[in-house]
Length: 153
Image (tube, rainbow, N blue to C red; front, top):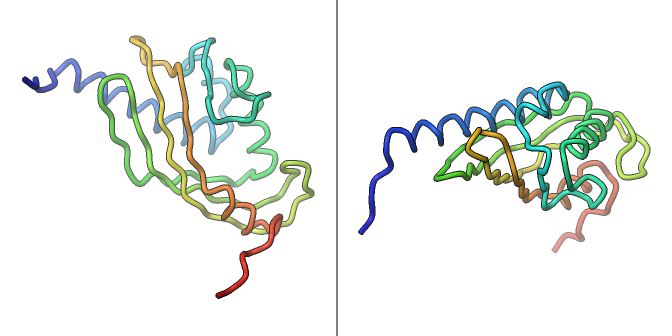
């Protein structure tokens, strides 16, 4: 037997979707690291981040700093947000210009745009406890000229 979500369940999912949108629009795209403690738990695990940027809110500050230094004009174009229970999933495009060091590479001045998907789990207070991301890193690095395009044919 399935049950339909209650108004309270729907309200919680909508709150979490608004939070996820704000994280990308304000924290990632605008560098508002002052909002991190409001939206993430201290025990946050960012499962798909590099090891040094995986645990806690300090890691999110480091990740945002790295991205904003490399791509100061970065922009997240959200295509869809969906949620159920304590999880919200987002499908988006990420774009910008490579104007600062990135992964040990000097700025190329090249622009990029590639797809991403993000999953976030929220606690009862509406703060993120876990994050998983799937990014088209190959396309990103190819567009920046940091790896070769595959041969035609």
